[in-house]
View 1 (tube, rainbow, N blue to C red):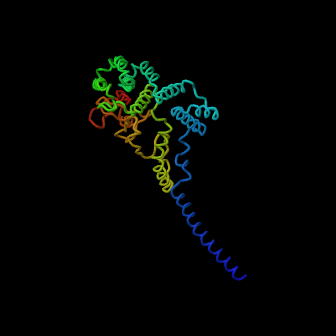
View 2: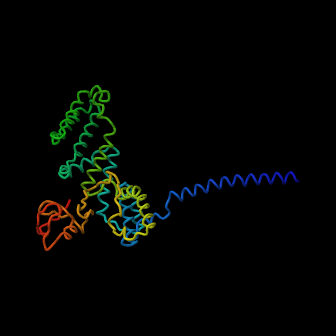
View 3: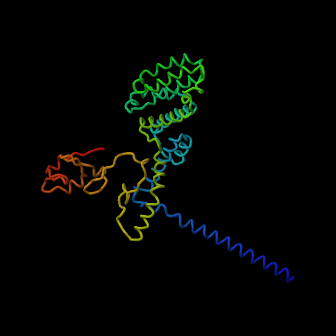
Length: 333
């Protein structure tokens, strides 16, 4: 009995020792999580940034719905609209429906809908310097070439579609015409084998998406994905700024809805438009404080112009020219 009791005690002590080691490891994991993750991420941005919580929820739901439409998940977007009682206008849906219909056809290597769309929007595509229609005709011609000698006459007949593009795409048309010489021997074993590369289909999908989005007034990437990617870059910096503000008890550092307290570099991918900063006040211009061009050609912000007025006259801060403040003209980039 004594030996059994001693064996039980030894076993219990061993279990307690093992449990202590496990507990020590688990506690270190918890501390590591607490150290690397902020449980109050929502507190990084003040609630004053949003007009109201209802407005915030509506903007978020609309961004998710637009993302789902743009990704082709139409049924999921419709379900979300019903459950959230979000009223989405048919005019808003239509461009996404058309875009996804044509992209689905392209993924199945059906060029018909895309060609029909490109022909109907030819003038606007030309204004964008787009080569979409030519690339679609080229891809159809290459498909005919892949059919072998039996498709040679049909390919020659289809080559007439290249006539409107001869001036801008002469070299590419010459290459395609030259490939006809090797049609009987097989293009896959000729110097023109690159024409049969499957990457042309991925390229035409990207070209169509970019040009169609430009014509339909849509962004190539959904606003939700861009906002999410930008937030991942900006969040650590904003969390550090928040900690500094709280530590030093600074107030009024971040009081504007439309700007951050510091500049955050998001990379070239997020450069969408030019930004003008006033050289006098060192502030980025906005709709309420637009850039103004003076008679002498120098540009400053409206707030800077108002501060420089003296006795009804304005003297340019860069040159000695004196002028009437009313002669300044707003610039729109």
